[in-house]
Length: 222
Ligand SMILES: [Fe+2]
Image 1 (cartoon, rainbow, N blue to C red):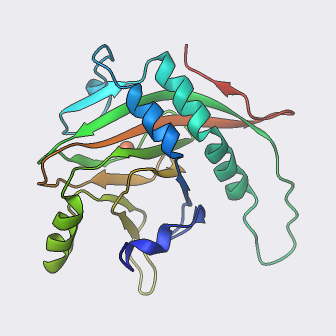
Image 2 (tube, rainbow, N blue to C red):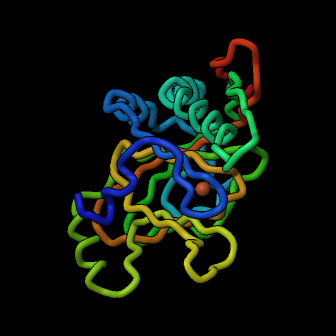
């Protein structure tokens, strides 16, 4: 692990700029289970997405259930942290309980030369991305890429607002398998191409969270 990438390894809420980004780690068993949900009968979802990638496959019910169980706690933790962020003084916030409504979910299978143009996610409160596979050789590619200016290969790039002196307006990540990020639906992001052979596989879901008495119920799309 390089010094540069070590800064986001603790789970929790990150606010590199205005909107918060939640960072979590998927359990190894959940990465395996989610990879096991990718099969040849999944439907193409590329018409609903902007990616210039080989395959974008819609989650079936089994994948939605597995993903919901795998990341439900992270999504609720994110919502609770977002709504109880400390303020300098005066505001008392009581953490609430939340149910999760998964609106959609899909796998992104990105290979050498593929990329995902800048976009936001519509019709949801939050979106998320979890990493299930990275191409062999990507670590070496990153080392090479960093020797040039503005390294970007295979990275996800979140960007917000305008650049001001002393303030950050973008945030880039070299993902590792098991990394999981949650963010507001309207946060612009893109993914840059890489050249290593092999697959960069991620999954995303669009979700809503609503207060409830008990909390923790996961609703799937019809
Ligand atoms: Fe996206």
